[in-house]
Length: 163
Image (tube, one colour):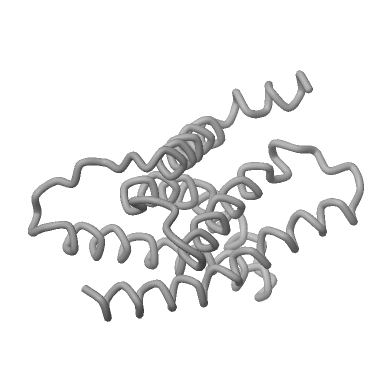
């Protein structure tokens, strides 16, 4: 356990990620939302932060594409950015999300939280001694990310239809 804490301490993105994740969970659980800056109203704020989230999510998939292409230098570059973009997305999600909502919006929020949590428990933080446990972790992180895509599409469609 001490080794894990030392690894977390040496990686500032992990601490910032856990802070962002804690803020998201607190805000969604207690229904507390950031006061929106007046830049054209609540819808504008939601569209801007939502667009940032979608842009970040699209970029996150670049790591998988680089891995599949088998270019180690590109993988290292994207992996470094992947961690920080993920942390940034957690903070933007905290500014975007208002509450858990009902049904599928709760599923979307929980899926996002699970992706962030699994992302923070990567191989730099948790030394997976067994290859199959690492593969299970990676599969879970990618599967949750894949599940998020249709949830976001549905969310955007519903949100823009009823606004």
